[in-house]
Image 1 (cartoon, rainbow, N blue to C red):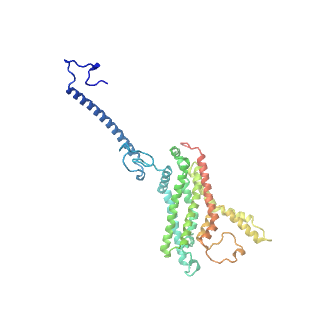
Image 2 (cartoon, one colour):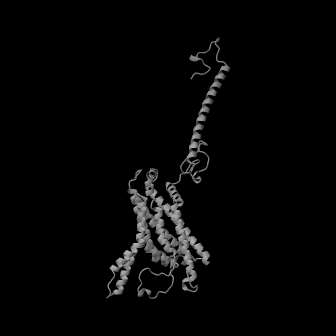
Image 3 (cartoon, rainbow, N blue to C red):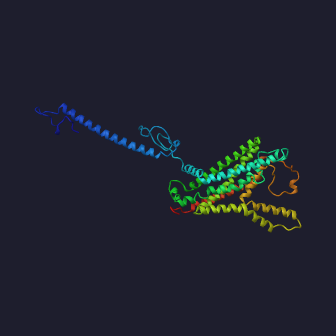
Length: 412
């Protein structure tokens, strides 16, 4: 490369020639430095403009995210050693799991809907009515009677008045309505609005959509029932002034958990109907039809079968009658309402020692009106509890298989 102090051709200047002066060399050096500074300033301004655009886009992207998922720290452009990543670096954003986002969205939709508010008000009024009836019955009973000597706090859930049934009867009758109302349109409404295909086009698994809808509805139901149950306990404590014992508290908590499982069965059944039928009204009618069938007509059908298959008199009539009653009881247990009623009654009434027909051999040696411990009561109701859980899982499996195998289009 030619030096700026040499002329072209590497020829030495002659004595008469005038070489490059110091002033011209300084001027050219200043011009070169100005040009380099100008190019450096242009590059810096361009980089700063790109960085500003990136920061603006990051700000707009994270404007709707919660504060807890934004990791605060130095900016990613603060130095050459800063790195951005997925698991915690300066300026990185950890997006929430898609399943949690769906659960939060579904819970928000349920809580803000008028349907949930109406069902909550209806069940709350029935709880207040059943508590008033139980307190009125307790006041009318002789304080010296054996009925009020033990497990008085449990009587708030089992005693009924002259016109109002007990708390467990209200829950057994209105609980299915709550489950059906929370799940009959979780899939069909998305399909009818045309948002289901848009939702599934996002980077999320299809089964997570169904899981999130079920978990969100079950969480809302669980919180509501636990709150109502403890509200009844608190009001009863203020009314009678006697705190519950540890065993009574355990029985009431198990009753609330069993009620959540029972309503979860009807929730899964309604979700299956919602995935099966395209219209939400059809799914709601199917769920209500099943509820009315088990609440009203199923016992009538079992009674007709019992009358038609009753054993004839004569011979070993007593053993035949006991065997026939056992078969009819097993047939009644095909109803989830019957399973729930037997389980809750046994948990909240410790004096119940068996759920089937008793013979004289079984009665001999038993202490009358003696209460069973909590462990023995759980052993009695364990078949009913497992039956309710199995029915809930079967309904969820049917909804899952149908939802995963169906074709979903934009306007299907």
